[in-house]
Amino acid sequence: MSSLPNCPQCQSPYTYEDGLMLVCPECAHEWNENAQDGANEEEKVVKDSNGNVLSDGDSVTVIKDLKVKGSSLVVKIGTKVKNIRLVDGDHDIDCKIDGFGAMKLKSEFVKKI
Image 1 (spheres, rainbow, N blue to C red):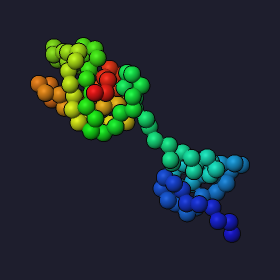
Image 2: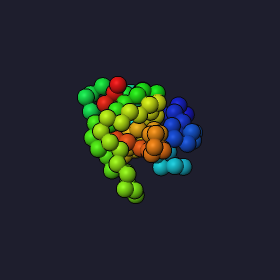
Image 3: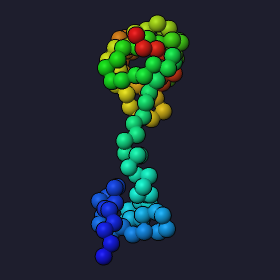
């Protein structure tokens, strides 16, 4: 009996080999066992407009006037945003801006203070 690893997605013990790939018959997840080790350690790095690495809790300023979708309001250039939170998706930053409330921003339109 072979000692194949459990599926990393659903933890099923019924994995099998298909060429160089490992396959889970329960959730249909396919992965390469050798490439898996480096992929788990990889973390998304979010950078501001100047190339500085951003992290949770940083303070940033807006570098361009941004129209607020669904409203006639505009976030003006130079607006300070404190205590940002990094998220996955199209907009990298989740924050609260005084006078506007909760917003999502793209990291390309801010610079770290």
